[in-house]
Length: 115
Length: 112
Image 1: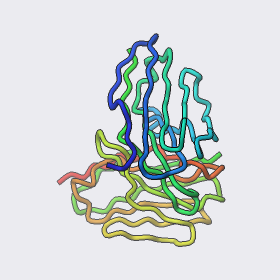
Image 2: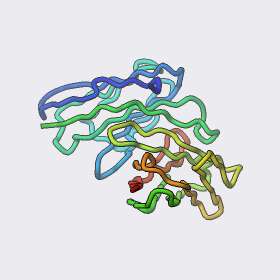
Image 3: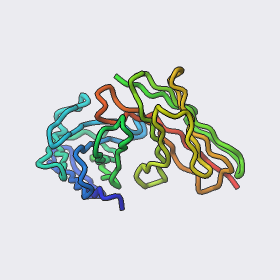
Image 4: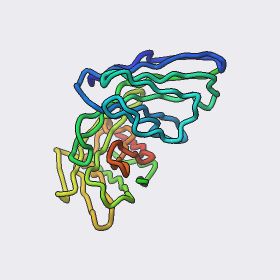
């Protein structure tokens, strides 16, 4: 248990469905992330939120829509996905400045299969 | 932006041998370099990290070395055991210092 909780752990969705992934951190961290992990690109940064403001969108297609209502919660809304979007989606969080030695902590991930 | 290269992509060793994984980074402003271990079906977990004000850090059988001039850092695992089998990722901060950029991972297999 890292203090970063993701739900659901497994999700199967059709290409026309709309679903959401949820992440909650209980660590008092101020930054939250979505990473995508697939065989082609093992740990690919998608979105960065600092104090619930999006600071980075790593050229992610608009069919992925993040939402950060507060510093403890992060969502990833999914709409009209493609089979190649099937992957493990990892949420992570951090407190403080990375270059000062504050690392990020991952949740267990949500396995997404698009059929 | 930051680019992190990791080698080798796979590494097979006999139990008791040493394993070395190497990474290079591109942004000279980066000051923090963590290593994560990911076991099958689990999340990546931090195993050791190093900041740029030191050249080496050790924790039992695991050590990390950093050469800031050459912009590379390495993970050293001594006396490997089967439970060390996993995927290992190196990382460095992105240019904005707001996130970690990861290498492509090294699959380490330790056979007994």
